[in-house]
Image 1 (cartoon, rainbow, N blue to C red):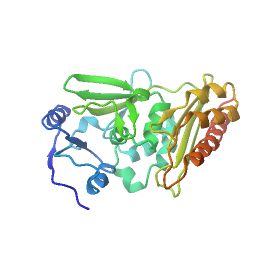
Image 2: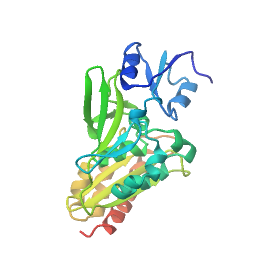
Image 3: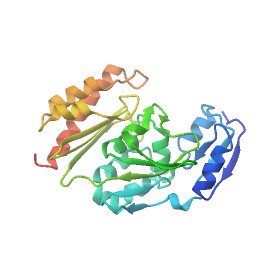
Image 4: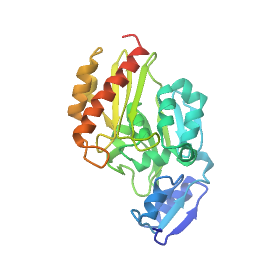
Amino acid sequence: MKPALFDYIRVTTVDDAIRALGSCNDAKVIAGGQSLVPMLNFRMVDTPLFVDINGIDDLRGITETSNGGLRIGALTRHFELEVSPLIQERYPLLHEAMKYVAHLAIRNRGTIGGSISHADPAAELPALAVLLDAMIVARGPRGERQIAAVDFFEAPLTTSLEADEIVTAVELPPLPENSGWGFEEFAQRHGDFAVVGVAALVGKYGARISVFGAHNTPLRAREAEKAFGSGDTNAAAEALQSEVDPSDDLHGSADYRRHLAGVLCKRALNNAMSGYAL
């Protein structure tokens, strides 16, 4: 199929993008287009105006913040995260996870802001944003605001972003020292959407666990974290299986996804523990 007719505008500043979004009901931002264009061609998306933000240079790049964290511009490509020395040094979990995002051609075009805004519950970046306590920086006609990742994702493909706002950056706080990490994902083929994935951090604070592909949003598994306590991976896996609410589809039943979430949770936690001595 081909898309319905639409208007297109390319902007070079965030203010121009905000004005364009406010000028038309149901206008949408386009950047990498790796999710939006296929949906457009299948007419799952029908919008009168696309606002291309690729010309906004201020939205690119990875920079250090004053508190020792990182600020990642919304137009930063997935592949840039994969090869960034700063990401590899400060957030090795994020560096590793990028290898699982689709295929190289898509990682070269797909943007961080696009993945976060698209809010696919089977995507890696939203789940990692939740795990890493990221702040989503958004800007609209009412100014700039920061939204905690745990509050940003509301439902499949639905966020707390207003129609006339755009994501400008993702800010990551520094990781606690000596955190161990683990990342496990199962897909039918490498590069396919995850059937289920689990990411974990372990440190003096206990554990942080997030899951994707087994809930209607990326889930910070608080009950599993409590059950882990000081190192009980079996209890954490059982708690996670009760905490997720997967759906049936062509790739697996809800029961299968629930079982897989528990298995991957144990693996991710064991890998994280191997990098941190409890």
